[in-house]
Length: 552
Image (spheres, rainbow, N blue to C red):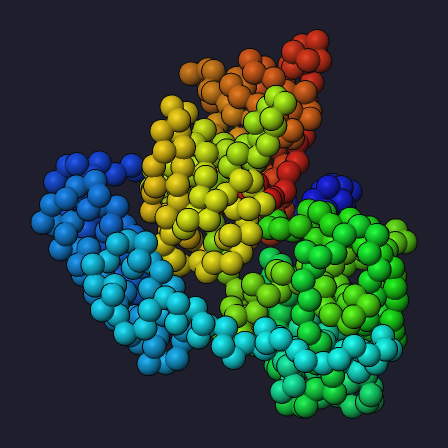
């Protein structure tokens, strides 16, 4: 079973194992030229680009770009392309209705609404009805009328998830290759929740080996029952399976917002293949940040390899979380995904395929007021990627995000929770406040979050700026003859650069930049003199994950 650890633990392991890295000493390969919307030739060029986006069937993205064009240059060219895009999105909406694809229809409707489409009221199915349709038949969201039973009876609703990968050669001998995990029924007709990492080989297009998915019932552990993956989310480590059996017991989903530190919980699963295993413990913490989005529970109930995907229930038998990881050699250090995230995910997982998460190409942290009345006050944008959704929409560093589609945003957690409830590929309205305390509402397209946002930024922006979100350190080239020489112009608080004693004015010479094979980590070798270290000359290697909770 793959295990998810904190970024710090991953970083330590990656450095210790001396993984193979590839050299890449260039940045800004995807250069972005800012559009001068006011020039007529630029408007025509942008209209031509929008037509290419329409040709690639990214209708909502094209609509957003056309709306920005009209807002900045209301001319015949821009109005014509906007009308064309509106027609394309309306047509996609109608096709989705015919195919009973309420999620796509809702995405199109919401985008038209955000872009103030004049014919919105004439559309046959409005937003409230689309929202209701999108959750109507989703398993697990209906209230269960099951009465409270003994804890031992809940075991019948759990399964062992078994991925048969054939055989592999180990020490010169062929041995069986398989992945074991756990899962639980959320509907009588055989829908099962588990972890993505348990079934990842089944849905990974890069995996070229043999794989076949089965489940085993708690009442019949000797029979393999074929199953299929309906939808999966690698970011939140969740997956929805379907098997053609009648569930012996169906779990109801609780509300983990009722849980607090010290509350008793029970974990059910198949640790090390030992099916029908039940362990108990308490909630140790409710706010551990192990994912790039959202927080998870820390629990002290015993969890081992094979427990992943099993339910974490309260004494009433309601699922309060999904077990997803324990840390080997650290007894009692285990984690579970709050059930609220599962509730948000189920309609999208039920729609089928890979769940993509939104992002707008920005980086920042919770803006917290100081003084006696200290409180969260929106999200402070500290970096915006050139050419990204936020940049095109007019969001800039030092802006503060206050609301998304009418939902007040007080913290980074609020922003992430809002995005987790939304699909990528939709246009939304974002209210921001600038340094002059002026407020404005901008249209932002929710793009698909890349697996390594930091690498996307490094490839798009110049190196002086791209290291700000990666290490928290902005640079300025300080020598015309030596392109490797820079001066530190900004250091973000609580960043990697801050933790390693960099400060403004420190000279830096970048000697090399490397990445691991998956482009998940960056390693920068540099020569520097730091004021906080008495200007002592030294060489350093800085390492950082290219994904974190601060990218959005």
